[in-house]
Image (cartoon, rainbow, N blue to C red; front, side, top):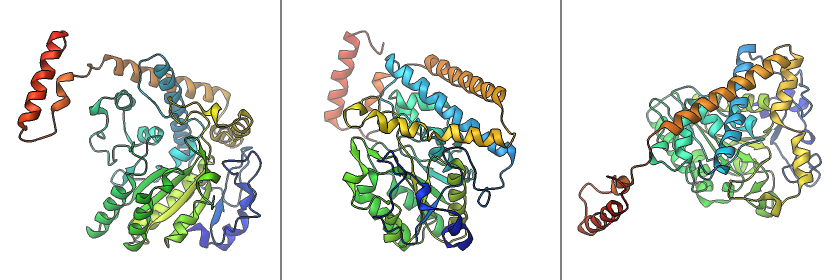
Amino acid sequence: MAAQNPEKQKTTSSEEVVSPNTPSAMDTSRIDLGHIEVLQILNEYGEVDKGLEPDFSNERLLEVYRAMVLARAFDKRMMTMQRQGRMGTFAPNIGQEACIIGQVTSLREDDWFAPSYRSFGAQIMRGWPMEHLMRLWAGFHDGFPPPNNVNDLPFSIVIGSHVLPAVGIGIGMKYKKKNNCVVVNYGDGASSQGAVSEALNFAAVYQAPVVFICENNGWAISTPTHKQTANEVLASHGVAHGMLSIRVDGNDILAMMCATKEATDRARAGEGPTFIEAVTFRMSLHTTADDPTVYRNDEEVKVWEARCPMARFETYLKNKGVLDTDSIKQTLASCEEEVIKARDTFYEMPPADPTEIFEHLYETFPMELQKQRAEYMQRLRQKGVGE
């Protein structure tokens, strides 16, 4: 990977990546990064490191830009719907668009993706209709299974529980000698779960074609990273388990795309797993049930607003002559229109059938549940429901 390239090693600097929990540039004086590379290609001002700039086509860059804009438009609309009482609890992704979108841009249709619950931007790019995701967040069980021909796991609500199954898929690929890979993401909070450590160990021992993306957004709900771990460089978890690891500026879409591409290429080539720590920041709420003002100050958020992944990418694309003010407005308008159309489709979908809650549990229904179902149905009929 890039960490083994001395030329790239010279052009990247640990001081360029910011800490999730401090408003200033990361102080690495007390942290031994060892042989962990720190990668940033596009800084917070939209300036590109010419020595590292990837050769993506303009069409590809615009496709990725639109995916980021669409993710934010979806995010804002879902927040509005939730506050209107027309949507369930929701986990916003504002400020993490580069981190989320960048991790799936190198995946093929026959690869697999195992998302956590803040990954809807990546899910949309992978082929999940937005109304399907709305159905999911509104609590409909039919929203969880992935669409046909989309090799994704349903997103995980239980923290870190999806990482072991993702490794299992990767090990299965290796046994079947398939030229595929799995990308699985989880947050800094999930990194403290024992199941995640077990998954890392299994992947390293079996050299499974798995790419681990640890989204270090600074907060495990209300717990800051420095209170959760004595070593805030979470990429060291990968090193400890014997796998190639890299720390990436998660608000830099180019760095995320490049790091993930190298990792997925390695996985498909049989070179084993890779650990990517994406340093980013949760700009909004943990979920709509959260109030971050209780545990963090506004000054910290304002500093990260200036590091917005979309703003820096827009600046970069403008400087390349790929984007201008009019095309930005057109993209915003078309994405908003697409989200509104999905919202209207969601509103037109049938309501939940309350009689289904006993389905899909047993092949042969036990007597006790038969009694419970009969009583439940009687109460529904008394309320005029389910008739």
